[in-house]
Amino acid sequence: MDAESLPVTSETPEPRLTDSLGRVIHDLRVSITDRCNYKCVYCRTGEMGAQYPELGIEEYLRLIGVFVGLGITKVRLTGGEPLLRRGLVELVRELAGLRTLWNQPLDLALTTNGHLLDELAGPLKAAGLDRVTVSMDAVDAPTFERITRVAGSFEQVLKGIRAARAAGLTPLKINCVLLRGFNDDQIVGFARFAREENVVVRFIEFMPLEEGRLWTPEIVVPLREIVERIGRVLPLVEMPPREASETAKRYTFADGVGEIGIIAPVSQAFCGACSRVRLTSDGKIRTCLFSQVEHDLYGRLRAGADDHELRAYILRTIEGKEARHHIGEPGFLKPSRSMVHIGG
Image (cartoon, rainbow, N blue to C red; front, side):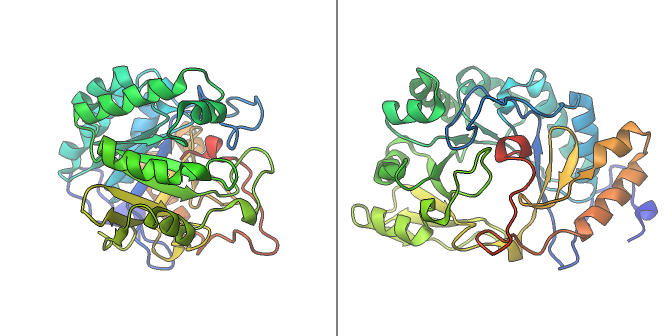
């Protein structure tokens, strides 16, 4: 498509981000920092901290606005830990304004470790945020604090979860990355937590995205095993997908109370229906978590590109999106950045 023909007005956009395989890209994940106030042992194996510069809030807003003008209908703010960014509430408020500008629904979500959520849940909801996902890898305090390496973190995150629920940032999702022999003893506890706290718990298979070299296939706890282990205690019923690009297999409990999801990129890859693209904290497009190449969108903006030129660059980049990842295959290479430096 000729990017010069695309409007710069507030007309309602049609989905235009389509890759060479015909997949429509409508989900943008934006890291607004790679800083984090936790040092989770499976993620940040050293003390490396932030490695990449952050854009200004106005620069994120402009780049996200270009994506929305191309048909993006879901924006998720991530990190690092996005609640560390000064100006976050203002950014959410400005992003919410894109709904009016483009006369279309725009789902605004955020992924956080929850440590600062207690105070920010209400202001974020008032600014226009729809939903929150909290990363939480254990449901007992000693295990949780061994993982985060931050004292008092468990109770602080519980307060954040409850504040988010009270503010109406729902459905509230809890993401747990499972590692065999590390926190897989938490599976049934999380299933009960989903029911007791009225949250959607999602288990995520461990992917090779850590800073160190911890990942092996044996550490992965696959979908089938998770379902079996919960089912022995709390029988599950699989739920139908809401859309083809949904990443989680969804289950409810036999009595209809509660929901869990399982995201299984290793044992049951969902690349064929992928609808995502990522923007790193320093303004690079990543068309896959496991991309070996990054595309410097911010570099074009900094060099003076107008919105038509940025649109053209995005369209060319998305067209070349990878068909799939190659986890576990001979010759597989980890991406140059770890997860905390890509954006969750």
